[in-house]
Image (cartoon, rainbow, N blue to C red; front, top):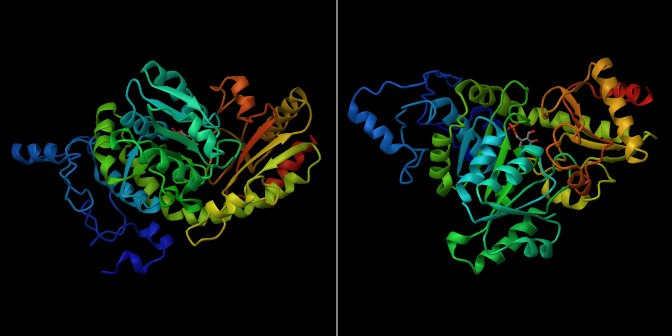
Length: 428
Ligand SMILES: Cc1ncc(COP(=O)(O)O)c(C=O)c1O
């Protein structure tokens, strides 16, 4: 059988691993959707062996034939999805969850305990903000905010109790980048004088970029999280999440998932494995081209104050984008998300943004008013009152989320239709 190293990444994302202990591919092209909440154990001894094997740190999940017990613990389709996601992100191990938030809760949950401290950015998805500021605080886990733009900011924010730096790049919704190599270098300096058990880990939410546009683990980041609901799923039909990182953390993540219960079910796993990941490269290539066309169109519109898209010449962090956001063939890959702000005072910009989106909601075929992102359909939403409404207004303003800001997630429609629908809405 041919070896992985002989093939291009886009081929492997379609076929997955050639050999897997989780399924016999000799007679099947597609993997199974196994829908058994509990699995037949054949003997008590086999059941006991299954429990002993589950999340066992001494066993390599890639080469050990699993004994399936109960769907919440493990099942074949999820395992195959995890193998492919680990490959896509260039990590040793992936653990998949029922949603992106379940994955984020797990990576924070396994690394933080009462008394620990986390540094995060105010420029993050609203529910992640709420998880950190509301729930983790209740469990005695403190946090502070940092922009992660300079090494001094990071050194100032990190306390002796800090165990995690958590951020998004590009950030949701304002598309600001964090220089991953710079953060990793600073954290290496911090960790050099700490015992291993007090080491600071870097966790990056790579949902906006996808592994097609950026692979943070290859730059020294410890963990990547994703909402699989977005571009990795790609069709807007399923929810899911994943943590990808070193083999050493797999046991804790699996046990956390078992006990907190946020396991992804077989059907969404199968859809993401069979439809989402194999078409990721194709969709992202097309969506990016369209995003550039639409961003350039928006830049020319008089009623718009600023358009933020990493693929524009005017993008403030253009040189960082061009070295950090590279596709699987090494080409610049600015992604499929656009953020723009209407012109005028905050009140005027707000009214114009709401009117534009309400017009689109009723009159546009190519643009749908909806939260979420990374689908074949182009979606528009108002971060300040929707996805980021859990963030207090003053923090939103500091984070650059303006009342007149609009987030666009570009899909697969004809770019001329998207531009025309936007044009009509802006005129109206
Ligand atoms: C950047 C980012 N991370 C995480 C999430 C959470 O993912 P999910 O909705 O799958 O729980 C979202 C959801 O919008 C997101 O935009």
